[in-house]
Length: 231
Image (cartoon, rainbow, N blue to C red; front, top):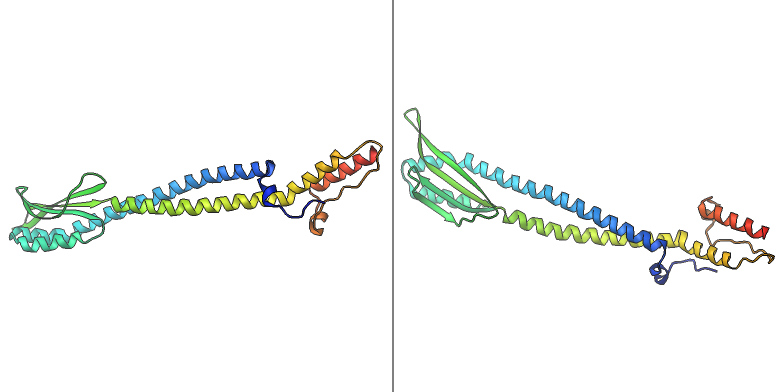
């Protein structure tokens, strides 16, 4: 009698079931890595677009007030405004220059790598004309987006790896329960067949529902029993 349940030993034995599980594990890993990379790429681009949108919002919200402060050379008011801008997420460096490119106010530090830079010309309306009074330089860092990308990559990869491994292990167990153990019994029965000996009917240890279901194993057992009766 074959054991009705698959043991750890039988699951680890070389065979079709283990090969099937390994191929599923490999294929699922490739799909997981591809889908994870695609998902993270989409989310990273979304974070970058959010930073770009924030820079545009700074341009719309502060251009007029900074132009007015530059027109009257109110350096204190300018500094207060750029300090407020600097408190926004991902902001790295803010600078206001006059019409001669002389620095009026600055905060933060500027780096060239992993940044988004935006220069906004500042104009003050005077006597029906737009007078250029300087510019606002805003530099945002993409480091936060990269850090969020790394954190999400670790979490997604870890969860997907565990899920893939558990699914592969379950498929291996299921294959052993539904097919592997029955194939072993069929093979053992076939090895003991001899011409002229009393034919023993082969039956599989299956529940009633599986026994009534006409599947490949059922056809194989019928063919083997028919052959053994003709010997």
